Image 1 (cartoon, one colour):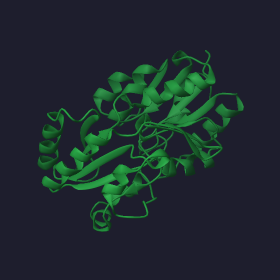
Image 2 (cartoon, one colour):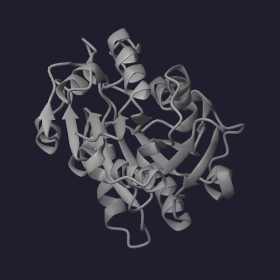
Image 3 (cartoon, helix red, strand yellow):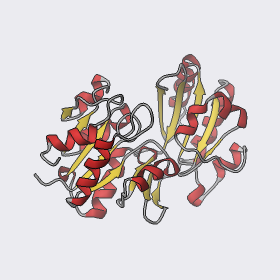
Length: 276
Protein backbone atom coordinates (compact mmCIF):
# COMPACT_ATOMS: atom_id res chain seq x y z
CA UNK A 1 0.00 0.00 0.00
CA UNK A 2 1.10 3.61 -0.50
CA UNK A 3 -0.40 5.79 2.21
CA UNK A 4 1.04 9.30 2.00
CA UNK A 5 -1.39 11.34 4.14
CA UNK A 6 -3.57 10.59 7.17
CA UNK A 7 -6.32 13.13 7.98
CA UNK A 8 -8.03 12.85 11.36
CA UNK A 9 -11.13 14.60 12.65
CA UNK A 10 -10.70 16.09 16.14
CA UNK A 11 -13.86 15.94 18.25
CA UNK A 12 -15.21 12.43 18.72
CA UNK A 13 -12.29 10.96 16.77
CA UNK A 14 -8.83 12.10 17.85
CA UNK A 15 -10.24 13.35 21.15
CA UNK A 16 -11.94 11.02 23.58
CA UNK A 17 -15.07 12.10 25.40
CA UNK A 18 -12.95 13.48 28.23
CA UNK A 19 -11.06 15.75 25.80
CA UNK A 20 -7.80 13.79 25.84
CA UNK A 21 -5.86 11.92 23.16
CA UNK A 22 -5.30 8.22 23.88
CA UNK A 23 -1.64 7.29 24.31
CA UNK A 24 -1.95 4.55 21.68
CA UNK A 25 -3.13 7.17 19.19
CA UNK A 26 -0.24 9.50 20.03
CA UNK A 27 2.15 6.59 19.51
CA UNK A 28 0.47 5.60 16.23
CA UNK A 29 0.74 9.16 14.87
CA UNK A 30 4.38 9.40 15.91
CA UNK A 31 5.07 6.06 14.18
CA UNK A 32 3.29 7.24 11.01
CA UNK A 33 5.37 10.43 10.95
CA UNK A 34 8.52 8.37 11.44
CA UNK A 35 7.54 6.28 8.39
CA UNK A 36 7.26 9.46 6.33
CA UNK A 37 3.45 9.52 6.31
CA UNK A 38 2.14 13.06 6.62
CA UNK A 39 -0.58 13.62 9.23
CA UNK A 40 -3.07 16.46 9.43
CA UNK A 41 -6.27 17.43 11.21
CA UNK A 42 -9.55 17.99 9.35
CA UNK A 43 -11.90 19.66 11.78
CA UNK A 44 -14.82 21.98 12.26
CA UNK A 45 -12.75 23.82 14.85
CA UNK A 46 -11.05 27.10 14.10
CA UNK A 47 -7.28 27.36 13.78
CA UNK A 48 -6.80 28.62 17.33
CA UNK A 49 -8.57 25.57 18.72
CA UNK A 50 -6.90 23.03 16.42
CA UNK A 51 -3.35 24.33 16.84
CA UNK A 52 -2.70 23.06 20.40
CA UNK A 53 -3.27 19.49 19.20
CA UNK A 54 -1.20 20.02 16.07
CA UNK A 55 1.69 21.28 18.19
CA UNK A 56 1.46 18.45 20.72
CA UNK A 57 1.54 15.88 17.89
CA UNK A 58 4.35 17.66 15.94
CA UNK A 59 2.21 18.02 12.81
CA UNK A 60 3.67 20.05 9.94
CA UNK A 61 1.20 19.57 7.08
CA UNK A 62 -1.46 22.29 6.58
CA UNK A 63 -4.54 21.83 8.78
CA UNK A 64 -8.05 21.82 7.36
CA UNK A 65 -10.08 24.00 9.76
CA UNK A 66 -13.64 25.35 9.88
CA UNK A 67 -14.86 22.39 7.77
CA UNK A 68 -12.67 23.37 4.84
CA UNK A 69 -13.10 27.16 4.90
CA UNK A 70 -9.55 27.63 6.24
CA UNK A 71 -6.23 26.01 5.36
CA UNK A 72 -3.77 26.76 8.17
CA UNK A 73 -0.01 26.33 8.41
CA UNK A 74 0.91 24.82 11.81
CA UNK A 75 4.61 25.63 11.49
CA UNK A 76 4.27 29.31 10.62
CA UNK A 77 0.98 29.75 12.54
CA UNK A 78 -0.71 31.61 9.67
CA UNK A 79 -3.70 30.94 7.39
CA UNK A 80 -2.60 29.80 3.94
CA UNK A 81 -6.03 30.19 2.38
CA UNK A 82 -9.52 30.99 3.53
CA UNK A 83 -12.92 31.41 1.94
CA UNK A 84 -15.01 34.24 3.45
CA UNK A 85 -18.76 34.41 3.60
CA UNK A 86 -20.55 36.50 1.00
CA UNK A 87 -21.56 39.83 2.57
CA UNK A 88 -25.25 40.01 1.58
CA UNK A 89 -26.02 36.55 2.89
CA UNK A 90 -24.38 37.21 6.24
CA UNK A 91 -26.42 40.38 6.72
CA UNK A 92 -29.63 38.50 5.93
CA UNK A 93 -28.65 35.75 8.36
CA UNK A 94 -28.07 38.18 11.23
CA UNK A 95 -31.44 39.83 10.66
CA UNK A 96 -33.15 36.46 10.53
CA UNK A 97 -31.50 35.31 13.75
CA UNK A 98 -32.63 38.47 15.52
CA UNK A 99 -36.21 37.96 14.37
CA UNK A 100 -36.17 34.30 15.45
CA UNK A 101 -34.60 35.19 18.84
CA UNK A 102 -31.56 33.00 18.13
CA UNK A 103 -28.14 33.78 19.58
CA UNK A 104 -25.77 34.91 16.77
CA UNK A 105 -22.04 34.20 16.58
CA UNK A 106 -19.65 35.23 13.78
CA UNK A 107 -16.34 33.37 13.31
CA UNK A 108 -13.03 34.37 11.75
CA UNK A 109 -10.33 31.77 11.12
CA UNK A 110 -9.21 32.05 14.76
CA UNK A 111 -11.84 33.87 16.84
CA UNK A 112 -15.54 34.11 17.54
CA UNK A 113 -17.55 37.30 17.99
CA UNK A 114 -20.75 37.35 20.03
CA UNK A 115 -22.50 38.97 22.97
CA UNK A 116 -21.05 38.17 26.39
CA UNK A 117 -24.35 36.87 27.75
CA UNK A 118 -24.67 34.50 24.76
CA UNK A 119 -21.29 32.97 25.56
CA UNK A 120 -22.60 32.39 29.09
CA UNK A 121 -25.81 30.79 27.75
CA UNK A 122 -24.04 28.57 25.22
CA UNK A 123 -20.60 27.70 26.64
CA UNK A 124 -20.07 24.90 24.09
CA UNK A 125 -19.31 27.60 21.49
CA UNK A 126 -15.93 28.03 23.19
CA UNK A 127 -15.16 24.43 22.20
CA UNK A 128 -14.73 25.58 18.59
CA UNK A 129 -12.25 28.22 19.71
CA UNK A 130 -11.26 29.72 23.07
CA UNK A 131 -10.39 33.02 21.36
CA UNK A 132 -13.02 35.77 21.37
CA UNK A 133 -12.96 38.80 19.12
CA UNK A 134 -12.10 42.05 20.84
CA UNK A 135 -15.61 43.45 20.64
CA UNK A 136 -19.28 42.44 20.70
CA UNK A 137 -20.16 44.34 17.53
CA UNK A 138 -21.44 41.67 15.12
CA UNK A 139 -21.98 44.21 12.36
CA UNK A 140 -18.30 45.19 12.50
CA UNK A 141 -17.25 41.53 12.53
CA UNK A 142 -19.46 40.85 9.52
CA UNK A 143 -17.87 43.69 7.56
CA UNK A 144 -14.23 42.80 8.30
CA UNK A 145 -11.83 42.00 5.44
CA UNK A 146 -8.59 40.10 4.94
CA UNK A 147 -7.56 37.54 7.56
CA UNK A 148 -10.28 38.90 9.88
CA UNK A 149 -13.05 38.23 7.34
CA UNK A 150 -15.91 36.07 8.64
CA UNK A 151 -15.75 32.46 7.45
CA UNK A 152 -18.73 31.03 9.38
CA UNK A 153 -21.77 32.34 11.22
CA UNK A 154 -24.29 30.49 13.36
CA UNK A 155 -27.50 30.98 15.28
CA UNK A 156 -28.15 28.89 18.39
CA UNK A 157 -31.43 28.11 20.11
CA UNK A 158 -34.42 25.75 20.26
CA UNK A 159 -34.99 23.25 17.47
CA UNK A 160 -38.22 24.81 16.18
CA UNK A 161 -36.77 28.33 15.90
CA UNK A 162 -33.64 26.96 14.17
CA UNK A 163 -35.70 25.00 11.64
CA UNK A 164 -37.85 28.03 10.93
CA UNK A 165 -34.73 30.12 10.36
CA UNK A 166 -33.38 27.45 8.01
CA UNK A 167 -36.58 27.53 5.94
CA UNK A 168 -36.43 31.31 5.62
CA UNK A 169 -32.75 31.37 4.72
CA UNK A 170 -33.02 28.62 2.09
CA UNK A 171 -35.84 30.54 0.43
CA UNK A 172 -33.85 33.79 0.33
CA UNK A 173 -32.32 34.30 -3.15
CA UNK A 174 -29.75 36.76 -1.76
CA UNK A 175 -27.97 33.99 0.14
CA UNK A 176 -25.31 32.29 -1.97
CA UNK A 177 -23.61 30.51 0.94
CA UNK A 178 -24.48 27.06 2.32
CA UNK A 179 -27.18 26.77 4.99
CA UNK A 180 -27.19 23.78 7.34
CA UNK A 181 -28.81 22.83 10.64
CA UNK A 182 -27.74 20.29 13.24
CA UNK A 183 -28.20 19.45 16.92
CA UNK A 184 -25.44 19.99 19.45
CA UNK A 185 -24.50 16.66 20.98
CA UNK A 186 -25.08 16.35 24.74
CA UNK A 187 -27.37 19.43 24.78
CA UNK A 188 -30.92 20.34 23.75
CA UNK A 189 -29.68 23.18 21.53
CA UNK A 190 -29.73 23.35 17.75
CA UNK A 191 -27.63 25.39 15.34
CA UNK A 192 -28.33 26.97 11.97
CA UNK A 193 -25.04 27.63 10.20
CA UNK A 194 -23.90 29.63 7.19
CA UNK A 195 -20.67 28.45 5.51
CA UNK A 196 -19.00 29.50 2.25
CA UNK A 197 -20.41 27.69 -0.75
CA UNK A 198 -18.26 24.81 -1.96
CA UNK A 199 -16.28 24.40 1.26
CA UNK A 200 -15.97 20.94 2.82
CA UNK A 201 -13.34 18.81 4.48
CA UNK A 202 -12.86 16.98 1.18
CA UNK A 203 -12.28 20.25 -0.66
CA UNK A 204 -9.79 21.37 1.98
CA UNK A 205 -7.91 18.08 1.84
CA UNK A 206 -7.80 18.32 -1.95
CA UNK A 207 -5.85 21.56 -1.50
CA UNK A 208 -3.45 19.79 0.86
CA UNK A 209 -2.89 16.91 -1.56
CA UNK A 210 -2.23 19.39 -4.36
CA UNK A 211 0.51 20.99 -2.26
CA UNK A 212 1.96 17.55 -1.49
CA UNK A 213 1.64 16.39 -5.12
CA UNK A 214 -0.30 13.28 -4.14
CA UNK A 215 -3.74 11.90 -5.03
CA UNK A 216 -6.86 11.15 -3.00
CA UNK A 217 -6.06 7.43 -3.42
CA UNK A 218 -2.99 7.97 -1.21
CA UNK A 219 -5.03 9.49 1.63
CA UNK A 220 -6.74 7.87 4.63
CA UNK A 221 -9.38 9.74 6.66
CA UNK A 222 -11.00 9.05 10.03
CA UNK A 223 -14.20 10.75 11.24
CA UNK A 224 -17.38 10.35 13.19
CA UNK A 225 -19.96 12.97 12.20
CA UNK A 226 -21.96 14.34 9.27
CA UNK A 227 -19.38 17.00 8.42
CA UNK A 228 -16.91 14.14 7.85
CA UNK A 229 -18.98 12.46 5.13
CA UNK A 230 -17.37 14.38 2.26
CA UNK A 231 -13.81 13.37 3.19
CA UNK A 232 -14.82 9.79 4.00
CA UNK A 233 -16.27 9.41 0.51
CA UNK A 234 -13.35 11.22 -1.15
CA UNK A 235 -10.33 9.43 0.33
CA UNK A 236 -8.81 6.20 -0.94
CA UNK A 237 -9.10 4.72 2.56
CA UNK A 238 -11.62 5.93 5.11
CA UNK A 239 -12.72 4.88 8.58
CA UNK A 240 -15.83 5.76 10.59
CA UNK A 241 -15.78 5.73 14.37
CA UNK A 242 -17.73 3.07 16.23
CA UNK A 243 -20.22 5.62 17.58
CA UNK A 244 -20.80 7.30 14.20
CA UNK A 245 -24.37 7.48 12.83
CA UNK A 246 -25.20 4.87 10.20
CA UNK A 247 -25.21 7.46 7.41
CA UNK A 248 -21.62 8.36 8.29
CA UNK A 249 -20.56 4.71 8.47
CA UNK A 250 -22.08 4.10 5.06
CA UNK A 251 -19.88 6.86 3.61
CA UNK A 252 -16.69 5.19 4.88
CA UNK A 253 -14.87 2.19 3.48
CA UNK A 254 -14.50 0.66 6.96
CA UNK A 255 -16.05 0.99 10.43
CA UNK A 256 -13.89 0.91 13.53
CA UNK A 257 -14.48 -0.73 16.89
CA UNK A 258 -12.93 2.27 18.64
CA UNK A 259 -15.29 4.92 19.97
CA UNK A 260 -14.97 8.35 21.55
CA UNK A 261 -15.17 6.59 24.92
CA UNK A 262 -12.37 4.10 24.31
CA UNK A 263 -10.01 6.05 22.03
CA UNK A 264 -7.57 4.15 19.87
CA UNK A 265 -9.15 4.95 16.49
CA UNK A 266 -5.91 6.09 14.82
CA UNK A 267 -4.03 3.03 16.08
CA UNK A 268 -6.82 0.72 14.90
CA UNK A 269 -7.05 2.32 11.46
CA UNK A 270 -3.29 2.19 10.87
CA UNK A 271 -3.21 -1.43 12.10
CA UNK A 272 -5.93 -2.25 9.56
CA UNK A 273 -3.66 -0.77 6.89
CA UNK A 274 -0.73 -2.81 8.16
CA UNK A 275 1.13 0.25 9.41
CA UNK A 276 0.89 -0.08 13.16
